[in-house]
Length: 119
Image 1 (cartoon, rainbow, N blue to C red):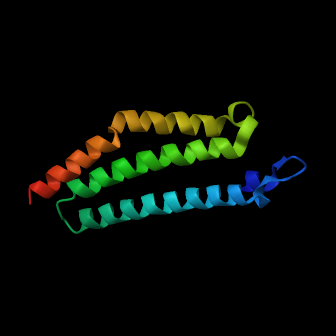
Image 2 (image 1 turned 90 degrees about the vertical axis):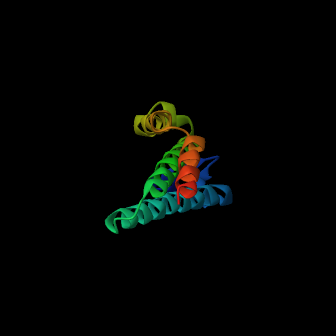
């Protein structure tokens, strides 16, 4: 966020542009939503509930959110993303690896469906 406030393009700060504000707000909303799913799963685990559904929701939501948010971050950083700012690029590669390791969202939804069917 700080970088977006400092970066300029075409002679003016990019943070003041409406499209970027919407992008940053969407990124924040996505992270907050993933955090809420995580906290819901955590509460289910502490309550000793069967939380397979919750765990699968966390995996699917957080890996997809990480990928989407890091892709948007690369857009915010623009030209600098692949050169001067390696943490953004590395974060995106790690998010993609997490998706591959954890299984895609479709696989997680299949596990959630099985959990509902087992009731």
